[in-house]
Image (cartoon, rainbow, N blue to C red; front, top):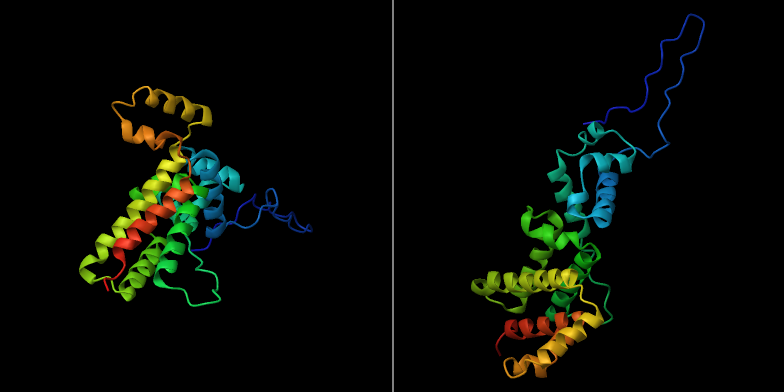
Length: 231
């Protein structure tokens, strides 16, 4: 469906006069679905889920609210499209040697996590939305890669949901864990005073561990070791 033309209508010309041209507002680019989605992502990055309203989105686009409805059904539609946009997977870079199944899975999941950390609202939004083509494409690629690696069909869903939970859990924890170094040190100091009750986590210095990327990768290795086909 074509979008309505914006701007004031030309006044009827008097006899002998040429019609006045329509004045387009602000010299904004034409409204399109792609531009709406990109701008919605920018608004979500700046103000979070609660900050996205159709009015604010229209203001950023320099259009009227009703003009948006030529392209999207409602705000829920905008959420779905913005979420799927940031979860787009462009594939692994060309490798100089054949990639094995493990390397492919790691790349897909690390890229997924990186995408959500770049847009922190996406991690809390994903479990509540219908799955769009980009995330479904990731899940299909993971399932096919694991299946071709020898994971039995009976184990495939468990494998996929385990990997999903690892990505989602690590992303949400990283995005919401905002303790400073001083806060961590103070928390560890309190734990040291309780070492008789919590000796193992005090000894491992759990509360000082901020190697988020390393923890994600090593945890992923633990999972993939369990998924490796038995010889």
